[in-house]
Length: 407
Length: 64
Image (cartoon, rainbow over all chains, first blue to last red; front, side, top):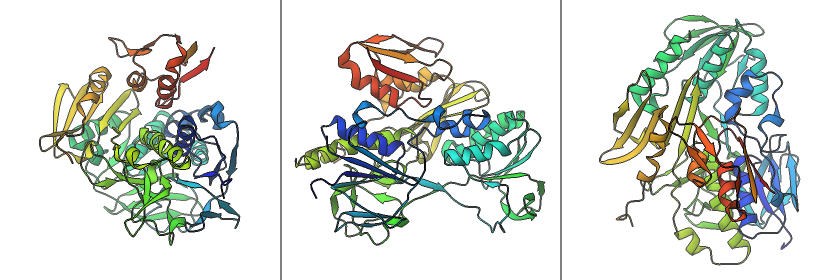
């Protein structure tokens, strides 16, 4: 099986960065991508913003360039989801029944949006947003004057709300939270985000949920648990995501919440043993980050697929060259999450894991203009977020360090 | 030499690139991105890293 490829399941950003990194670290052998989406890797942030409001924009506008290192000996099998993994035989079987043997496997299957939490009765007009195809479908529905109801007030929900409002839609946001972005940013910044949305005509129904849908064949009204009834031409479900790991059931890996990996991005079995030839990267991977603590988490921020891919690529190249991977794996993996969001003329930029905080402190500016908020857990800085003031927010990067006392 | 091109219609001045290649990318006093258009070949890895972390994918790196 020495001719079997490095098999990367999931042809998105994390898989792409893993392949580039493995090449950079010296792996010159074959690479195969097996991806459920029909598209080559592309950048997702514009899906809720530029691409959602610009008719005619498609894959060309968001595709990642394929670097020269990946022009040789790379096979792309797209539009084909993985169905199962036999880790003993080192074979992935796809949904068509074809087998894909590997020398090393990268699990990069990402997330999918959680579905509508109530029965949809087959109604049309219900959308989620994760893929390019989702965005193109939603774009045609967000026409001026449409009644748009967004379930969920995280980053995806808030960005869609802003884009829909700019498109001239009548936008309502329904959320179980007290303010939008409450879990990510806390009540102070969340309250300010709400105020800015309301200034653009967006209505909020907080501490509320979806009770029922009315319409035939398309959704026409939604009924909230509070009893409020809203006109609704377009219902967007943005209530978080689930990891795509069903295909790994029975593989012997720990997939209790995404794929558990060690600091070298190597998959951990449900027996607790690290698999030297199976890696997981991107949104689907769950790993500890010593910048914060020793709890393994899935973290859904844009820079982490790149960070995990680059790290995994180094270990993959070492493993496939027959080198000892333990020193590399023991070097620790402590990527600083960074995230940002554009809504109207508001530019949020943040570093760290703000949602771990038990205390927040406004340290510069004022909430209704530009500002910087620090996030603390006990005595430790765990995050920072700014509206504007990017140079100041950037200057915090060096303040996130692994405690030297940590063993 | 490596040629650096930033599509300023796409750039939102997040400054992620600044951390990867501070010799080439900087945020000025108004928090706007400034960059130099050419760099030596040995900076290729840093510059590709800067292009990778751009949320808007506005940075193009070419070897001249």
